[in-house]
Amino acid sequence: MLLGILLLVAGLGVAALGGAGAALFGPNGRLVSPAARVAGNGVAIVVPDLTVQAQNLEIPQGLGRLQIQATSPQGRSLFVGTAAHDQVSAYLVGAPYDAVSSVQTGGTATTRPVPGTQQPSPPGSQNFWASQGSGVPAVADVVTGSGNTLVVMNADASPGVTADVAVTFA
View (cartoon, rainbow, N blue to C red):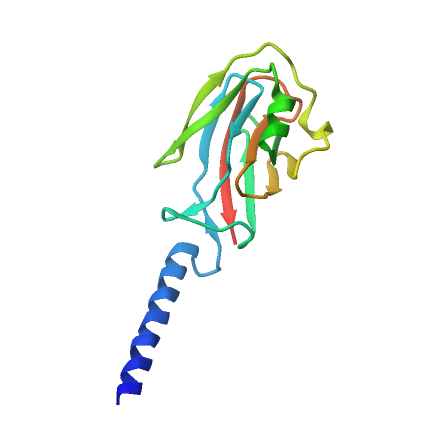
């Protein structure tokens, strides 16, 4: 009898975890965020220390696959990539860009401008990216974790970046 109760309690716990997983990741095992609009006047939008959270729980690095899709509302070719923070800083040194400081519920990102006057070369011509994609839309399977920075740019590195960014985790 005691063994039956323990198995029932364990079974209910597993069912609850399965239900929570289905609620977070949906029936096909994918978590898709609503698109967040990011916009800035500089040559890039930068998200330092890229981490992934689901329901305020950080998802460990290496667990699952993370894909980021950036779409320009104007139909421009975009670039999305991740790299070590120091490499992104060296690439953007002296260039104006916008750093994301927060993302609000509803998908609106708040940025702060970083001034500069330099024009970087197009991001796709750089060889330091850990992951990258470009096009209409730009799609990249990205690496998360401490020290990784997400960058969204116009593919030609021109200023004035506007993108709707959606994240898929599977």
